[in-house]
Image (cartoon, rainbow, N blue to C red; front, side, top):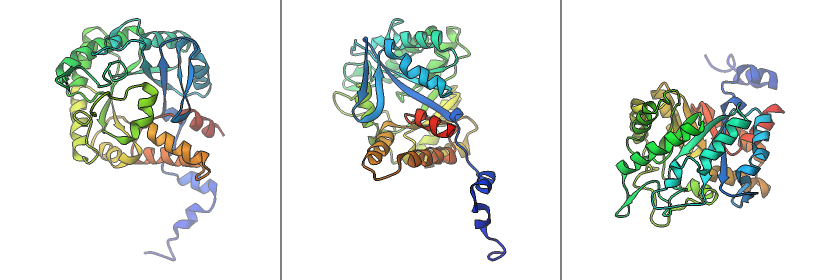
Amino acid sequence: MGFPVHRPRRLRKNENIRRLVRETTLSVDDLIYPIFIEDGENIKQEIPSMPDIYRYSIDRLDEELEEVVNLNIPAVLLFGIPSHKDDVGSDTWNDEGIIQRAVRHIKKNYPQLYVITDVCFCEYTSHGHCGVLHGGNVDNDQTLENTKKQVISHAKAGADMVAPSGMMDGVVKAIREALDGAGFTDIPIMSYSAKYSSSYYGPFREAAQSTPSFGDRKSYQMDPANRREALKEVALDIEEGADIVMVKPALAYLDIISDIRSNFNVPVAAYNVSGEYSMVKAADRLGWIDGEKVIMETLLAMKRAGADIIITYHAKEVAKLLKG
């Protein structure tokens, strides 16, 4: 039976009824805020392509962390920019490296924050690729060996969770075995399970100083044309021990988020990446869109598609908007 008995507009008449029947909600509890931490002193440098996002040295980091805590954002995801780079990214497993020192600082001074560390090598290698190079190609298995050293160092520093982003085959298994073998059985893994070789990463590469010096990452990150492959990658990561799986980027890959939610019973994270952030900011500054409304609609779409967690540079703005 259709119109006029059924009138869907009855349940849209005012905000109160819309609230009562709303299917999807966005909460500050859903958010992870990425932070860029640079080796050095007295650094607070805005990233030109990412308005309102900064690189901080550890001695200036409290300015950011205090706001994050006051906004009740539950977690941060840390990216390091070291002063030393080499061909294997050895600073990633240096116990006095930039990430390790930052983790210790946060856990000492902001114990209520949940600290997640990005596990990769591109910011730390002289060539900008995500692992050890042999003949111009990333050596998957040697990179796994170095990844094991990296995660143990992060765990020793006090990281609550590790998040491997390099798209190496077998990385979750290698990390789980390394952490368990070192006694860190309680540290979960949030895997960048479906990370696409995307053009949306441009501003991040400026922020993290991680642009490859040659070539691209298409031989290890996923082809944007592939949908079914994402399910294979996620299935493998879950089998290897991933506690949370991630889709990156988010906005152009809502179908992937939906597929994963429909096929797997694990928490799903969506990374609202730098290019997505910067496009909204640029259009808002030009007066072409209402930035606040677009931000909320965009993140709500990620939740509606099936994401449980959203990693976003908009986290502070969203937390303020949600507080009203």
